[in-house]
Image 1 (spheres, rainbow, N blue to C red):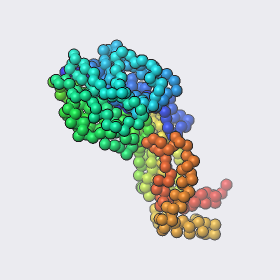
Image 2: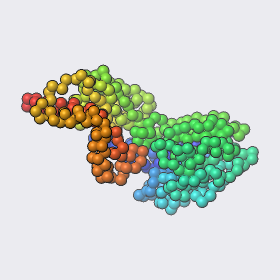
Image 3: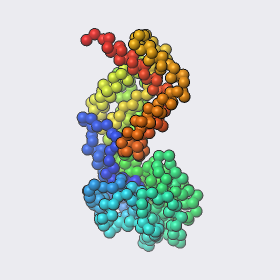
Image 4: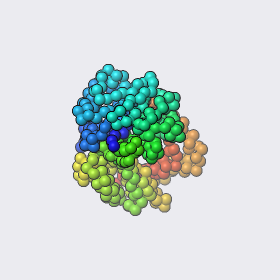
Length: 423
């Protein structure tokens, strides 16, 4: 009987992208989260006395500016080596773009699979054969698994592969293959990487697993993140258990404000739900995006004083949860009740604007053409960093339409009322 760990997509020192920073936000804890998650992986491997660790690609997050991440990884692998634990590593698409990582030799207990051909490493003492191939370049479009060696008879055969498998709408298509093809290779376990969402695609003979990344990097990577601990007996997977390694957890919390009449009530409801998420994170830093939804009379105040309520939410999080909760952003997706009175709109100054808005609301083709024309110009001016990745912004593809019109009149109502208040 032996045990091993299957991890992938560590993205060491992954940079923060488009995250709102504010006074009191735990930026330092967020910045080194990927390193601390890797430390947790090493601690788990030592505590469980595993025979080896598999890292199925994307150890790094792209090209590096200095050697600090390389040295940190080497120090952690050396710690495994001191406990007699082997490490098998393949390069993924992000690693292939990292030129600096090729300049340092890895500790002796780490085997980096070749980029030019598939190869097999045998551990005769426990009768294990590990097959794999690294990415030579960022975009690998051919099926690498098709050229993997035949299984070694009598051994527990593991295939390591960085792949999109049949494709994902949130990940680029790299080293594509099918589940049926992997099953036909005759291996006992496929250690996959590239897809950040944990998936058990086939339970046994072979077990086919995406463990997901070990630390969520943004609000689209919510929930527990970690690795799989595998126990093998008589060349069969006896247990296949997920172990969380993340030190901070992301949540996208949608708050229904339908029963609220005042923003303060929305704040109270949000606090209760955030507190539940904080408890579920079990001592980890919680990074939460709050999205307020629903038909509510609080809409005009929330939208009209968005900056005020954003900072009120931040202040509330800091006072209620301290450094255990970080408000990543506040999104408003509310609307006024359809029968809410709009008499406060001045007929003389805003009548023409109301008329145009009403006409656009009833003519979707005209509205779509108008928005596309205007947004295409703005879309071209976006920085390149905002046009790539999981949260890429493509303005001409956004469905603004009716939701946008639904917010205009209430906002004007609030602003007009504010100008009438006595100073």
